[in-house]
Each structure stands twice: as C-alpha cells, then as structure tokens.
Length: 440
Image (cartoon, rainbow, N blue to C red; front, side):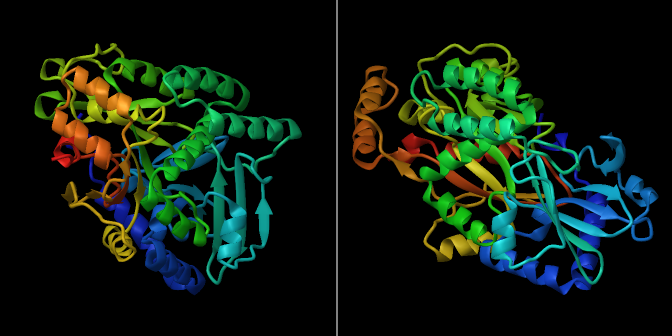
C-alpha cells in the first residue's frame, strides 16, 4: 500500500482546527498553556487532543457527518470518529469540553499549577480524568491505559499488584538471543492477566523507557515534555527493525497483543526493504516494523511467510547484525512524535542536537530524524560479518573505532488528518542511514 492509501481529509481537519481556535480564543488560560507547550517543547495542543465534548448549539451531528465523521457505539454512548483520518473523536454533551491526553495526571496538574474541580477514576486505572470549569466550557486532562471508553476506571488491589509485577518483568525482560521467544511468552501471560489493551500499553511504556536509555535526543525531549506534564502523550508510532529470519515471529508477537494489520509496504525492488504498519484497537499504539527484502520478494506476504536468511544484508539487516534486533538488545530504531516541525527542530538545534534533512516534505506530512546516536559495536559481531563477507576490513575497522549509527528520535508534523506514511521518503532515509555509507 502506497502513499495514496490514506486520504487527505481537509474538511474534517479544518472543522477541528476551527473548533480549537474558537475554544482558545474564549479561554485565555488554555491559550496560554498552548503557547507554553509550543514555545518550550514544540508540541501543538492539537497533537494532544483526546476528544471533544460539544453541545449541539456549538456543533451539530449533521456537520460532523458532512466532513466524514461516523457514529459508533462506545459502551452505550454515541461517539463520532473519522475512519480515515488521525483526528479527535467527538461526544455530544451539555457543556463544551476539550479533553487533552497526558501520560499521568499528577505531573500535569503540578507542572501547570492547575487545580481541577474534580478528578474521576482511580490512579493507575484504565481511565482517569481531571475536569475544571473555564469561562467558556471545561478543560479535561485524560489518562488512558489501553482503553477506548470514557468510564472512570477502578483499580482493585489485585490489579495493582498485577501491574507492579508486569512492570517489573517488562523492565527486566531478557534482551539476549532469546529475547523474542521470551517476549512472546511474557505477552501471552500479560494479555491473559491484564487484557490486550492494558498489556499493550504497559509493554510499550517499558519499550520507550528502554529506548530513552540509548538515545540522548529522546531523553532531552522527553524531559522537556515532562516539565510541561505531558510525557510522551504525543507519540505517533514506534519503529522496530528485525532480521529476516525473525520477522514472522515478531508479527506473531504483535498479533498476541491484538494489533490490527494496516498497510504493508513492498519496496523490495526499489530500496531493499519492506514494512508492516500495525495499529491497536484499544491502546493508541502504532507500530512500523521493517525488514530487508529482495526484488524477487516484492509480492511475498512477509508478515505471514517466514523469510530465509540471505548472504547479502540491506540497511536493516546490517543494523540488526551490528546491534541486535529492536525487540532485543538494540531497542527501537526510533520513536516518532507529533510536533510543530519547525519549532521542535529549532529547539533541538539550539540545544546541541543535530537534525537531518527531512525525508518527507509534503503538504500533509513532514518527517526528519535527529542525527543518529552512535553505538559501540561488539568485536564478535564485526568478526561474524567479516567472516561472512558482509562488510569489508575497512568498514569493520571503522565500526570498531567509531561505532555505528544506532537510534534516532523522529520529529513529524501531520496536516489534514493524514495518517499514512511516505514510501519514497522512507526509502530515501533508509539509504541515507545505511551503516556502510556512514562508515565511509
């Protein structure tokens, strides 16, 4: 599936933008908050909107349906969403309310010195919400943990203990050669105990934590966002690299968590890679999983059919050979989050973090990597690659001395509700970040 697979939805996006502009104009406190988020971390308030509650006097159901929103039943409540766009959901209510997503309530309330009128839902439950009155309407800060509904969560002592144990096991899970097998077993247990949505949310929270230990730009940006109390609430997708022989097993891991398979990229003949995009129906996690492909595998269903090892390595295969698969020692290749692209780029540059040339610069999507975090390469990995003829002596020596490109933070901006990816742009950045090229 290529660039055109997801449409641009300008009318729906314009409706959402106009509603936010009006809300900010009528509520100076929220407008000031939006300015701080943008100035200090490059995050647009629009990137954080979980949902709107609107009375019919402000926005009619007919207007929502006119721009492509459809009504669905969520635990007995009608909720409107756009099936083809990355836009907030809408509920109908007596009072106008903007609900923004944050990772945890307490940091958000403290950092923004906001005292809500009420807090609903138990701490660490599936859904917690702080609500406060404004001159016009209400502001809500929402914490979701693998849950799509709107009922305040309850946390039993049994569940609290189960969550503590799950987090310990996720932080301590093996990242050696048995990492994928161990992750599969752990996923099966966690889904059984916590449910698929919560297990997914907990797994990827731990994955982001591990990723940040290996990427300075991400640590810096996260600290900045935590100073505003939002955490990674603006995450867009998580990228995992895999060796060919383990890719099908990685897809089985994602199935265990309940991910739905979205578009698949077949760029084998063009660039030597393929990718499967997945989205979770309960957690808001999106995954981009990529792997080496050869031209003759252009139409292979590589998410289902095991791929055999091959003698030559593409960019992704070499990265895994140098550092390990993403599910193991390497961790994620990158985390991508949504921003005002120009603003976050300026902030990163001002604070000593290089940003590469955008690999996508389109009317509805702009993406760029920070300069790669350079990781040391183990001698045994260099020797193995040399013995197989997959790198030269000169490249091996450079990897020994200088290390090789590891992870990135990816900065992204979307317009018009566009939720897809740009295959040509991804191909370009994969070529640009090949370890052999960087080792010249």
